[in-house]
Length: 284
Image: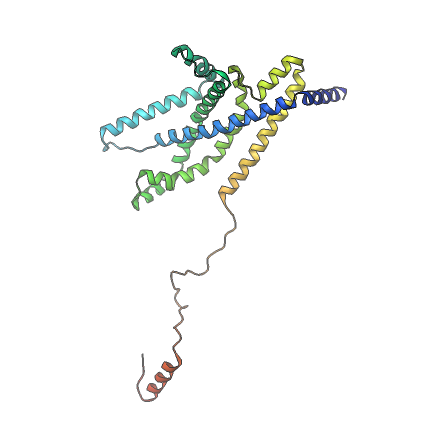
């Protein structure tokens, strides 16, 4: 019990002294995670679409070669960035580009931000490429055939029929990648990016209160991921729409047999019909 009281006291002291630094780290983490997830989804969407463009042996040779080359490039990109740690990707990009080109595009704080954004975005894009591909091929092929039957080309079919459904199907994966990015931005400290975990490292380097600061980090990351999960579930429900439906009891475009009402005749026309009927003639 005394240990818990002591831990609470140390956490309170750290928060009182370094709250602005912790909050700045949280802000940097969230900004990087949101921006990189958005850009990564665009990369994954592009790769997923390119990877699912259909072609047949009857298509021109040039088209088949281009599409095969595109798929090979996308496959290499996906395998490399899914198969290597993000921390090494950051090291290779941040130090490798200046090493091979002799030019350092990542100078200063803005350069570090740029490198961190590139690394997390392309890493997210590699995972999203497979998610998008799976979302596209999960749609019933009959919908593609139906779209083509009414004259839609491939672009119209993708944008108007397939992608709206595929994106809804991969929303949980997008949310999963966003939550992963919130945590994985912590590896960007290797290139000097000051996010939440780097803030913790800097603070414990001054006061050596490692465990109390780590407890603040744990609570902070947990709060960010829980809030993100809640918001993403709300987004899924909004995209699902209402589950309350009202059945249509009448069809305004068709008349059901036995429900047709003859239009009411004017009184003067009705009187003439009756007079004619009495005279031995019947109007139809």
